[in-house]
Every structure is written in C-alpha cells, then in structure tokens.
Amino acid sequence: MSNDWLLPDWPAPANVRACVTTRAGGVSQAPFDSFNLGDHVQDEPQAVATNRLRLTTALGVEPAWLQQVHGVAVAHADPLRVDEADASWTATPGVACTIMTADCLPALFCNRAGTRVAAAHAGWRGLAAGVLEATADSLQTAPDEILVWLGPAIGQPSFEVGGEVREAFVASHRQTAAAFIPSVNDGRFMADIYALARLRLAAQGITQVYGGGLDTFTDERFFSYRRGARTGRFASLVWLSQD
Image 1: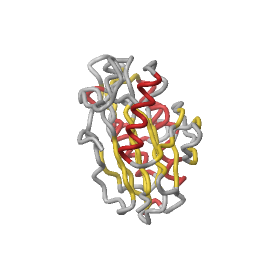
Image 2 (image 1 turned 45 degrees about the horizontal axis):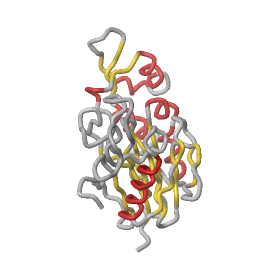
Image 3 (image 1 turned 135 degrees about the horizontal axis):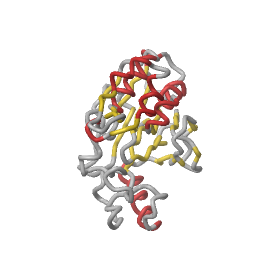
Image 4 (image 1 turned 90 degrees about the horizontal axis):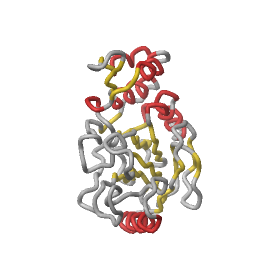
C-alpha cells in the first residue's frame, strides 16, 4: 500500500478496513497523472487497467466498481459487474465497496458488529436526494449502531453554489441553512458539504460521524474537477477483512 494513501481514523471494528488513494503511484500521463482510477475520463484504457491492478494487488481485495450517476441507488457490491448506482454495500469479506470522486463527497459506512460495510458517492445532487440515508438503510441496523467516515471532498472556501442548491437542501431540512454562507458574488453561496452530510445523517439519528476537514480543490494530493475539468478520479474503499 502506498504511503501516500489515507487510512480513515475512526473507531470501526478491527475487521473493517478502509483506504483512500491519492494521485501518486500510477502510470497515467498528464492531466491524469498519475494514479487515475476512472475509466470514463478519457485516460488511456491500459493506464487505467494498470492502475486498477496495482490497487487490487496492494490491498488484496476485489474492488466493486460502479457507474456513478449522481443518484441514490444502492447496489449489492459485486466485482464481476458494474452497476449503475452511487452507493454499494456488502457483507462478503474481501469485496471492497468502491467510490470514485474528484470533489464530490465519499462516505464510508460500517455497523458496530462488523458484519456489513457500505460506501456512497455524494455530490450535492445525490446528497440532497438522500443517497446517504439510502446507504445507511442498506446496513439494516439501528442508527446508533452505524459509523460513518467522510473522505476527501471540496471544502467550503472552494465550493461556490447557486441559490437553487441551497434551496434544494433547506426545503426539506431547514437546519441545513447553517451550512451555507453568502458568497462575495450576489445570489451565490459557499457550501459546506461536510456539514450538510453531518446534518442529514443526524436527522436520521446517525451521529457517530468522523473525518472531514479536507479540501480537494486546494489539496493537490487529490484530483479535483473544479481545479481542472479534465482530470482523473481517486478511490475510497471499505471492506471486511478475510482474516
């Protein structure tokens, strides 16, 4: 495993493993340099295949890739197929729920019993539509038995949105208004995607939420779509150990 990759700091059971890759350690050429894992961004297919093989070898698990569409569908993670979904869950050791991002929020889930894990891709559309809530439901356990770790995403100082984005959240969860501050540009706001996630989860009774505080736009360890639209994707993975 690369020394550059992140290991979540959360009180998950010992058999729950997780990891977030960075841009370093791959074979892709600029602007996808170098550890791009996205096969939909016009990178060379062989480079993506090599990077994915390196990931699988380093972690010793089988990633279950998704075709992410900014929705709320949650798939049963299966390395042998690519589902159109924005989250997945598994109870099978050695299978990694895998999310690709480049500013959107990756959220990793597990239950306290260490029998199920899940991962969600939450851009603002999916977040507002309920992808985190749907992912939590896939664990089939009480809210106070769920742990969540929020991975690298765009930070509030970098995330300017229109008023329609604020309204999409506030219309159904009034308390989320606190996650928006006015931008210097009239009618626009700076959104705190981490706060939005925590507020949405808290509304479901899920308060054991960890991580956050990074900004993929300013932290060049990560790919960022807003920093450069033609870019790669890094992965956030969670799985049950076979040990």
